Image 1 (cartoon, helix red, strand yellow):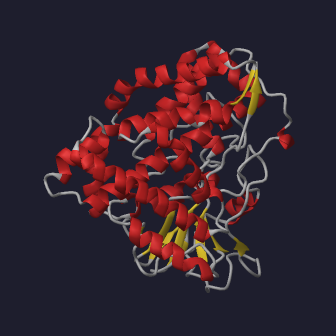
Image 2: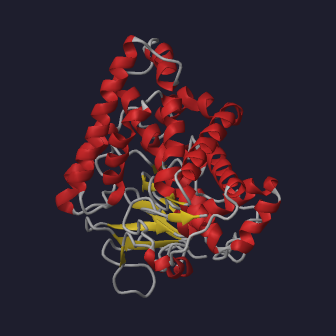
Length: 420
């Protein structure tokens, strides 16, 4: 492939006169935005225009996604003054303020070696061994929630009754956040992620969650509990290795990421399996197949897409036959990479036996999701337990009658009425 120089900021790749607008909305619960297939066909890197007016690269294919997510010449440090801003110009001030206030300790938005310092403080909390120790508690929580559903009658909203409370209970217990306060942080998380059209609302919601956690950490400092916050207070904070501000921001990241993505995947995955009974039949008959089904659902649904996959080149480099210049914004489209036909045969089909663990739903490289082992355990337990204990679980609503988060930063369902 011949390398091409970085195109003019106001020009697009290929024969299109102007770059497509980005982000693009989903219109189908089973698929990424339909424009992704066209972009993927045009090339591994394509120029798009974001609401701020900037023209950036989007990465459409799997191999180049892995390259971008591992190349040290591409930065995830949002504190850089020239880091690409997605929002409209008149809203960019909110994004910059949020990035500044939340940066210390928010290792997801840091490059090595700073990123590695913070991540090492947490890594033992999320190992496979540690998550296996948590499995009995997750199972007990899932069973109790289903007991409550069954006791309430023959129908329920799966989002409110199961999908949201399961990961919320687990992350609250792990961190040391009172579950009684769940409505406070869940409502603000929803507002934070609901739409990119209300940056002031998102900013206010983020600051309210952060102020809540600031107070929680201050109270925990007086009497650290047997939880993640307590262990960090007794360890790196006491040793002078972690500041109060960094601990608050780290807790913010873990709380939001630790419940929101899984809370969307649980009902959406159940919905997808109910709509594909031939794929549900395998793990239902053989529970050892649930881990593989979880991986395929993560690939197929890709609820996070490009969120947390925003990057900026800090040196000139070549990616997929294109020269990317220092300062160029580079966003990885996870949902497109996970539908790359070069890697996944019949990529638009749900095949729970395909062995899809090489998807990029959790990212790739040093920024791969710290909590992926916890998410996998929660999803496996949630799906298996639901279909074992409620074998006649069903939804009578057509797709068009269901409410999906088409405009949100993380895809999912607003509600999901089920019966049995």
